[in-house]
Image (cartoon, rainbow, N blue to C red):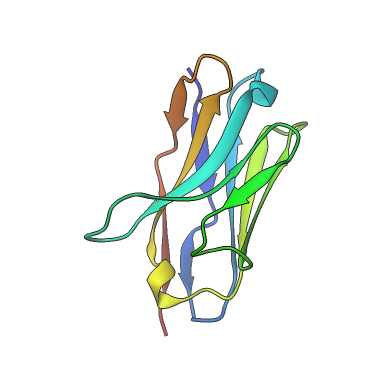
Length: 117
């Protein structure tokens, strides 16, 4: 079992920045592709960004150019840097891990991000 613990959410004004972090409790962190999702009130869960072991990233169009996903394999962490935040970015953000071979997946508990003036 892999535990994912998110941190860094909060309230920010439009145009501001936040950095979300996710720490994974596994000795096999390198075997996991990592990602961030979000769920806004009344909307479906949305995939925002993914990162493979070698650092290859993919982003949803809604966040491309504003969000940056990175990982530190030595510390078993990923970070989502969010810039130029908009009110429509308000959601609960979830860290996700998927084992590259078994496809087993794990979720964090979620962290609230609110963008409002």
